[in-house]
Length: 169
Image (cartoon, rainbow, N blue to C red):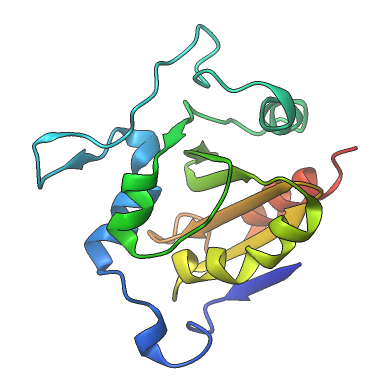
């Protein structure tokens, strides 16, 4: 598990190739961020009656765990390869979904195995950048959470989100 708390990006600044707009757009996917390059939405998934899109399996279990922990996950939408290209960070996941939990932007990705998810933590931290946040894996899943707008200055919500994610069986 790797966490960052406002310490800046690892390695030379050149490693973070995304612009501030692109990073903000990635984490705003849950809010229906518009891709201004083509005028369309960059979210790409239909939303189910439960407000989390078509997520099932382990990612659906994560969202249910957050709800059980009295956190409030919003609608989650599929994070497409085109979105990854916009930020120049290759998460190399089978699938990713972006949303919000207690107002904090979150990306959940599924990998083929636990080693691949753990190896992706560093790439997840590239998305966190200089914001307070975390990128951590649990089995075949990767969680990325970033507080870009300082809605959680003491990190309590980030702690609750990551704690519930780590406690998944």
